[in-house]
Image (cartoon, rainbow, N blue to C red; front, side, top):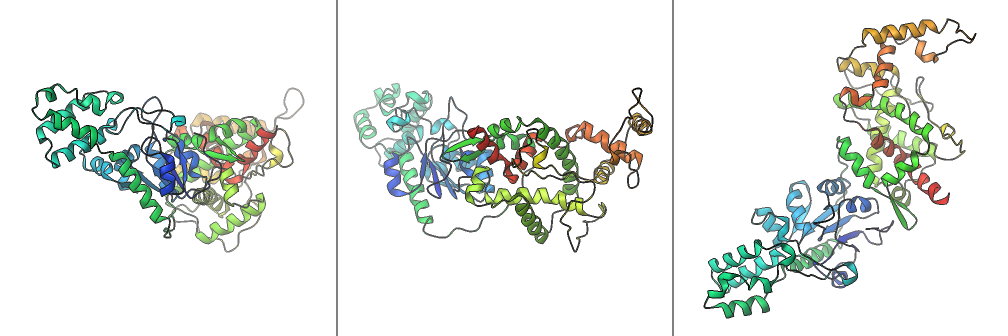
Length: 495
């Protein structure tokens, strides 16, 4: 599914065989998409949509829409409704997390009357044939039999036997015609009345629920919605990478995935190598900040944000956000995480026993010991490729993390480090001197043990010490908030 880069409406609806789109559009003005598959919600989260209505989704042959992407949409302040088919199933699963369910089928799932996805599954035609139904979903048959009992056209036991017969039938073969082949039915004296009822008075519960949820959303469009709440970013980097790789980045009328952005970034090997080192160091500091439950004060977040946008010439309007796969909430959340580390870098000392004190005045230049990655550090030397500025934490912050984690420098690593420092003053065989960086041998603030320890930590990387961290996800998020993601896509398309 290739959704548009810019939503024409504030509501997106995933709809297939439950209701013709022409009929749906008369009820609710919205952007209509085919039945949802895994990743489709991620691709529209940054399109400017404020409401998602999930009705139909794929079941077999293609991965179904992921619960995680619905939760992430909710976390971005997007209202998500579910009804009728896959929407009812997911709403029952995620109702406690904020997804809103609607209709009889949702209630059946929520109350445990039904539990299998085959209850709403059916065989249908392609989009060109408007997803015309080629079989009957079990929920419709169930509702029809319930009504027949209520109207005394059949008994509870007869309805149960017919329903059990249908449940044993593979879902693409279910139909009212097939229902009437039930062996038990053939001997019933009221067979004719039952056949007449199910063929002429069948109920399409999926269509009724779909109409209901569309009307509900149409009414909600007339009233103002509550402001979105910024939720804490979940900390599972393994699934976060999958989410980011599925996220949609808009470029003109086209949309690209996060995987595409990472592939384009990989063409800048020097940038990737530098960011690997910087983001690894920042991961240790972020982990320590989380342990201490630290967060950047709001007024300093605003200051850092203004300085960031001025430095990188960023105006985070809707088009810029969509081009970088962001919503306003995700942009602010990622900046809060980024600037938390910058704020800690700006502190005079790592006072981890209590929250770091605020400075009355924040200097405009990075503190000593920080590393700035500028556009000139890219291998092609473009004058204006990115403006990617990421600051390396000072060594003492990494050493603080190690002490908090009860990690010390192995003796052999320390011996090798001291030996290398001593060799810096010894002439090499070819007459040149072996050199190491000045901060590597500067022990004015850092002991040789801390220097050796932090060097060893950086060599091993955060995951070696059990941190739930992934370079690719952290890297892609930096590409997003700097605007480099959109620039990489544009460069690839133009070049």
